[in-house]
Image (cartoon, rainbow, N blue to C red; front, side, top):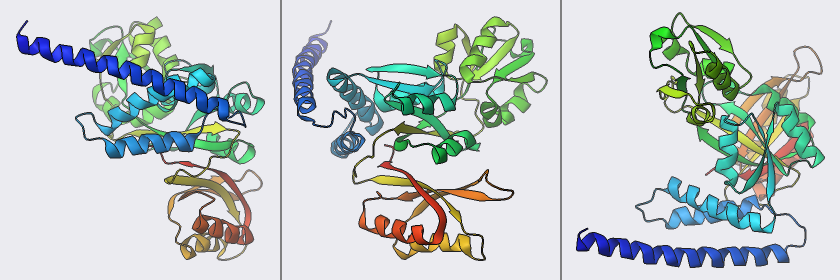
Length: 354
């Protein structure tokens, strides 16, 4: 070993010792904060968002901002668990992208609770069987997840946060030769995200829908001449080979997930508000819904229509706007919106995904 290499490793060891001391000091302070909380609420999404935002602004590299966010999310997770471990329900089974989103948001120091359906995630959080839930709400290629939107309108739960996860689909199987594959399992949304690649490389393979990508991987593990579309984590879980990586048609393919809870989140300084509303049955009513937002300078980032399920050809509109419902401009716009809309419900204000 060269003397220079030895010196560098000694410096790293000394820094590791310092980091260990500082991490434990942080954990001790987090414990003190927990003792001082009067409402017993462990998770403060706005505070965690502010911490990550501040650290990214101060980051001078060479670590990327994404790496800094992952590192400190895990530190926060371990410190939070010393106060009280959180149970997080997610759309399972184990190995799904929703599980990956839950871990990205909360870190590994949680109690994971896999659910078979989006409905079950909502029920577990409402009943108190889980502290929070994570569900998909939209994909950049395939659009909105209708069941999540419908349940948001019906439920008493609040949106407490969002997670944006780049979705890189892989072809998983037991054998490396694509010519031997006669069927492919996957969730319908993933088939939609990869149809161009499938048409080119596996045009004759039967496409068999599965309840989730993890379930697709399990089925592929049982059938040697089949394959599955899923993430890397499913390959590890079910002992499959990654035959081809990144087979999604859109390289920027991203899914947005929502964090659901029973609390209203305070302003973080960089927030989003989601609401659902419907228009009165008269000419110009839809236009009138947008006027309060424009009047008060509130930017709308999403507008999604869904059947209202209350009558033929009746629709509700899901809207995301910039800002927190307690912000002066947003509060004024919502107050006016309540006067012109036939129905309006704020689904939650929460920090913008980092």
